[in-house]
Structures are given as structure tokens and as C-alpha cells.
Length: 361
Image 1 (spheres, rainbow, N blue to C red):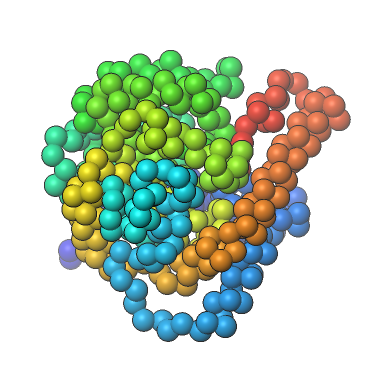
Image 2 (image 1 turned 120 degrees about the vertical axis):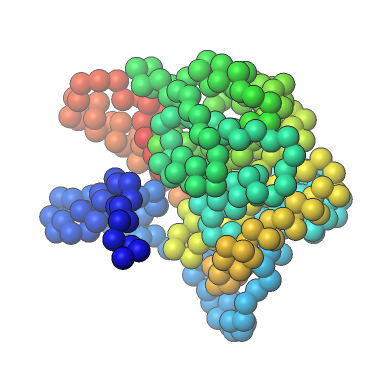
């Protein structure tokens, strides 16, 4: 029969670990495998601002008809402001309309879907002169390489993290970028690096941006944790520097509302493509529309509507609660460091725990 020779897919250690944890009934077992923010009781945490948004949405009681292929326009406009800043040239001067100006944006199936849609556009959207190579640092989020290969790219890696020093290996990264073929793509985590928690400093980001521009590379930013590192604006430093100061005319930003809106399973995200001209942006957005239409037709409504309410109507509350979550993460890092060093006298240098940002270490 046709399916008799189908082989098992590659092992997914994260999926296997999650299944093992779910089956383990020991009260001593703690799930540290999945990147989610949990409350003091170790249970899933629902932001208060999300509860408020649910009430607002329930009172509005909108229909459940399909939304347009490109997604929630207000969410995309507000999301672009969160990423690029309200004063950025790509979202100011009337450019918050996502079909105008130099920014092309569509709603996606969370951050993973944003990366996939962006990669499919780069590979199949008629982009001229682009290399088939994409650079990814190691270690990194485990889904980058299979996802990008599925889209049709050759993935090349470089050493991102120097374990002995518990620091970023910026020398290796810059060397890889300086040797990359013109038109290559470079995948970058904008903040709260998964899994290292080590981000480039502003000076290192400036050096990276200089190498990207000099070699004619196309950055693909993954912004999955904005607001959980140093702050909403601080976590967007790299993207904003590339766009507003470094003069990188073309790049992609893949945005997720899973972690910073507690909307994990609702799959709310966006891909934003910065273009050199308004004419290019209109064509790029139409290609993105095609990618969405051909793959999943349109994004889910419910989570997108909630994220829109949180960003637009409840923006101050959202930012305030994100600050509370961020401060608790840092307190937990400090507590763990103190326990390891002062209480349990654990051998080793554990300062990297308190020097990191976000959910990982």
C-alpha cells in the first residue's frame, strides 16, 4: 500500500519531555521544558489585563465569521508600534495603515507561524537576488532549523554562546556574517535569548547591524518575548537600531503575543516586513496575503481580538502588568542565585543566572 513505507519523523526531545512530565505524578516534578510564564503556584498564569479584555469582548459579542486573510488591521497597527515605536518612520506619518508606507504586515499563527510565513515569502515570494542560505546561531530554539529547511533554505550555523565564559560569542557571530554570501538571511533573536538568556549589548548590536549592512544581508528578527527582558522599548532596541539608525532598508520582524499577552494556545502573531519603498511594501503585503491564503486561509479571530483590546484599549494596564511579571522573573533569578551560592554552597560561578533576562538560562 502507498503508506506502508512511511518512516517515523525525527525525534522531538521537547515533545517527548513534555509527555514524560505530564505522566509523572511525583509532587517533586517541575516542568522546566516549555517556555511559559507561570504563577507562584506553578500553574498557568492569566494576566489580569487579559481577563478585562475577555469581559470587553464578551460584551461586544462579535460574530464568528472569518476575518480577512491579512488579519486584524488594528492589531497589526498596534503591534507595529510596539515593535518599532510610535515615532519610527515606518509607522509614523500615516504609515500605521498596514497597507501603506514602507511596512507590510499580516497576522500569523503566533511566532512560529510568523517565522514560517516570513520564510515562505523569502523563498517563494519572487524576491530577486536573495541567497538560499540562512544563518542561525547555536544553541538556539530547536524549531528554527527544521522550519527553515522545510521552507527550502540551506541552514548554516555559527557558535553563538561561549559556555566556559557564560557569554555571547560575538567574535564567531561577526566572523560568520562577514563571510556570508550577499543576500543571505540571518535569523536574530531580538531579546531574551532562547535558551541562553544572553543578548548582545547595544554596542554588539551596532556591530552586528554594521556587518549586516556591509554584506547586504537580510535580517529576520524573532521577537517572542518582548517586555519580559528589560522593558517593552528596551527589548526592541535591536530592531529599532537596525531600522532607524543603521540604515538597514529591508528586514523582517516575527512578532508573538503568546508570552507577553498570556495567549499561548490562541496562536496570535504577526510578521512585519520593512521595505525600501511604499510600492515594494504593497507588493510584499500582497505576496504575504498569498502565503496566508494558500496555507491556512486566515488567522484565528478570538485571540487576535483579545490582543487588540489589550494593546489599544488597555495599553497602560498591559504595560504595567508586564513590568510586574518582568520584575518577578528577575527576583526569581536573584533568589535562585542566592540559594545556590549562599544557602547550598553549590560549587561553580552562578552569576550568569542574574545577568540573564527572560524565561531561560
